[in-house]
Image 1 (cartoon, rainbow, N blue to C red):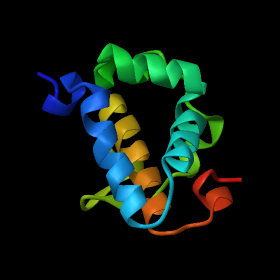
Image 2: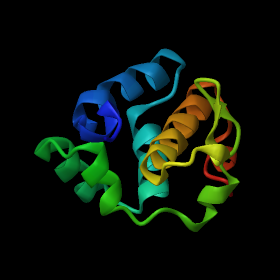
Image 3: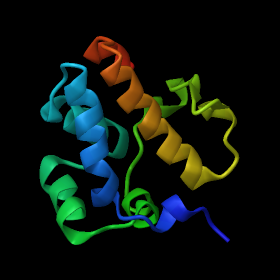
Image 4: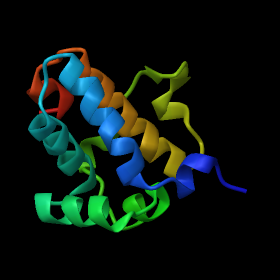
Length: 114
């Protein structure tokens, strides 16, 4: 049995990501840049997923993760992202970590592992 977040629509969590980064002075465009960097989606594909009610499971199933994804390390909710065993949960945690870094004011090139 998978975690509840797997079947949660990505679009239902996206506004929380937007609020989190905007409260810290970042923009929705920067958030979208981070999401497209991680997933390989362009803005159009991201929009389709948001409008279509895609679950996290399906959102990441068709994503082409950035080759630098292994450089995303650290903790989210007390869990080290590089140690998450479930592949889907790890992808969700990667996204959470990137959103956290963006909200904390990290430079975009650092968030995008440039």
